[in-house]
Length: 573
Image 1: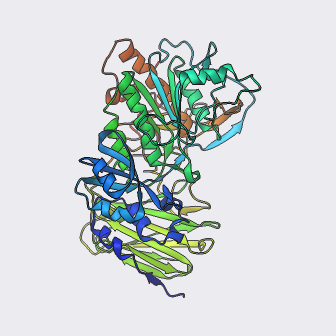
Image 2 (image 1 turned 90 degrees about the vertical axis):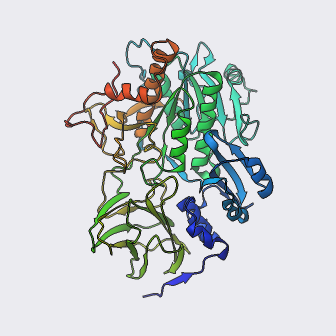
Image 3 (image 1 turned 120 degrees about the horizontal axis):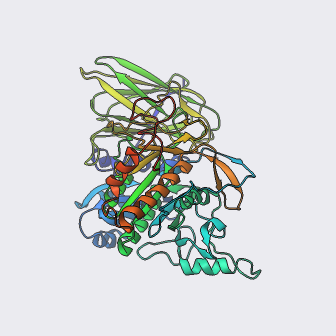
């Protein structure tokens, strides 16, 4: 067997191991070698390798401008004391020393919740009969991949239904207070629409390369066709979406609702597995905070990872050991493991490589460590509970130092040297983030909700098959680790007909396309309650209560709430 070499950690970051308000992925990104970090999408997310500038999320008490001047970083101020900053790596350690810092983390990868798409030549109207409330006087915000402004579903009497578009990727004049992108208003969009048949007309730069955002927006606006759309095309720097970009998008939408005093339904179809799946990530804390600033409802897809073998849970009895295995296929450059538990900092963790070599054991009392083994770099980061999360967390990064990772079975052994029973939850990156197959050998299908669908103040939307009236087996399952009922509701998410960026109708499958059904219904309820004056407090948790208490049962499920479908299927007849 090849010898395992323990790598030295940069001395400058040694103290980070004892700082308990720093995210796990940030710690791992700081201690790993730059060349290795670049091969791990999550660790390298939000880092500009040319300038060595890191995109971080912080919560700060005090005057941030003074800190920014001293450390020479740029920032965007979000609601609730949150900030997105762009800082040089060499200054991150200095930032940690400011007493006003409440929390700091690195931006993470997000994946769209699209499961499948199949071409269909039939066109149908996405409208559910006689609708008395159509979302008039309400904004629907779709934060996604963009929109096709020329599609007739977004046009009424030659005028657009789109109120604003913030394209985060197009250089120009961004919304006030934000650093990048271009803002298009309703009049500008109408001008482009009016000139679309003009051969000399240069079409609007904001477009939808994947068609995902167009399909999602089409479903939402069809359910509430008198609403106005606020579109944010999320930035794809490094060819990825990040939590920082999403937080700025949400912030922008909430501010519009506040400033204009217009109720808003917000649609989010993104997710990842970087957190404890109990609503404690910085993204979820932010969503829960700002959702209370405006009269709004936020719908989030539960993800499509229920049947992808990305979650496992084991119970380690007192003075006992337990094992779990991860199968790694070919063509993988890297993968990460998140390990969370409520108690017992003394529990030991050992990683056994496919060739039989052992790395560890580790506990949360260990310092962060790097190892080199068989052309792979293994980084292990452990931390204690933070001011935002009472759980113990561990982040394991395995990256190939050359080309691909060693294929085979990676085994994890947990040893409990105490008299306390310990439940351990583990997650791999969501499907779509990995370059090859990586999965638990004996997965657990529960707790497969993606983040931020485990946030408390959102309406978490799963998917069901409307043809068979049954649960869609891919749809993320609950509950949260704190046993909060999620998903809240399920909506049609199998073979949903909508339109893409080329005007072609397709059948779509995934919680991405279940979510806008709920978003559209949120808009209709906001109109009924707030705009029409029937219930001025019909937003937030009150609105969620109306939706879940009108849910209908699904075939084969007797007891509600249920881990697969929550309170049942969307039904507001």
